[in-house]
Image 1 (cartoon, one colour):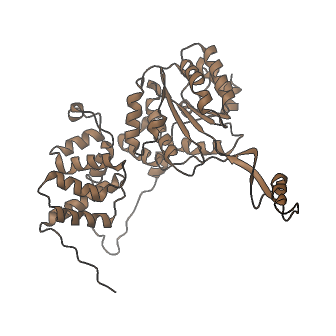
Image 2: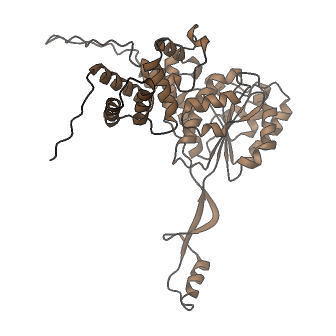
Image 3: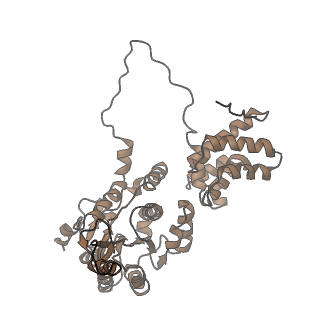
Length: 416
């Protein structure tokens, strides 16, 4: 077996250790960095030298960056790890926006929080190993009143989460899926194991053989995949829930194999904003930063009826064809004319195959449809569900899988 070539390391071992730790930070931030790339990076730095800061940057960039969406994350981690003498303060400011001082000097750039979380991961953990217990001694653990942190995170209200819990919830939402079953159409397509005979195709094949039928062609019904249209309320009462739902929506829009033909995203507060093109960005921080910059009414007032009127007038015919499913995320607290809101909800309901309403107010066990906006909207939805926790978003998949799932709709309709 031929011997593997030896790796010639630079004379200073601290540089090799720093490159290794830098690669670990990139891996925590989401870049696919393995041992092979670390070895290539050390070789590249040894060959190019590290006297020039620009050469050092591009040597590591060539080894660790393989996709366009990774460039911004790499640049942020590199700036915080190698170049900025106040990188710790910048990282703390990016992690905790409530801290005054550094965060007020400049706005956090996209992917900066991911870089800060990657570099500060484990910084406060003790490095000393635990002391060994003496032989024969027993270790007693009090397991009463304990709960799995993962289970607690799944059932914790988005509005009650701390900064660390929000970051953990976003990582969970980034891995969630929302699969959908295809729609069976009336049109036929050729199939070897089809359930019905295709007589027209059989006759065409027989005409090539002098009118003799040698075999019967089979066919099956053609499948079609629907669109998913998400209308998300970004008013002041919905801002925290909207941020988490948009993280989930970004994961659905960028996950392949779930069955959706296309995912459309709209935000509304006092006006309607189309953020579909921003959801196509692979980096979730950059996507939501661009969507937030375009939606100027973030954390403002609410005009649900006017925004639904704009959607029905300008976008309904474009995106609601082919059996589209509409996901409406709002608390329904609207002060406009309830008759106008009811009319626009009826138009939206008739244009979509299914209309599912997620309302975070269902977190209250004694919730009742008393607000005039909720009373106007409720009769025109197919399913009414909660949307305030990770578990409620996971249960949303059941609403798409079961066509007859209505959630809390029938119970609340009885209270009207």
